[in-house]
Length: 81
Ligand SMILES: [Zn+2]
Image (cartoon, rainbow, N blue to C red):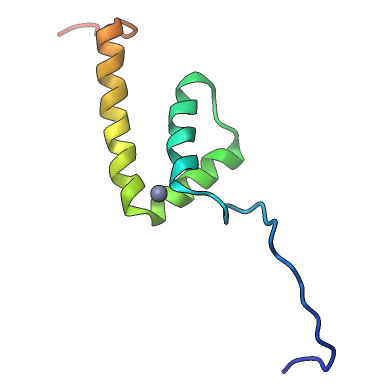
């Protein structure tokens, strides 16, 4: 049932991850290496990855890539072995 008056509500500028794209996702993943992500950013990231098969693969590749980079740069040291 609609009210007789035609009321258009604009939900164009929602800040609820609606505009969160694969680009934002990869950007946040790389950002997370330099600074701690906010709760909102984490939620958006997880929400997107959860529903995006591309980013599910990408995020795993990122993890491996970063691990290799750390290894090359000597940022992390493995204790014991
Ligand atoms: Zn994605």
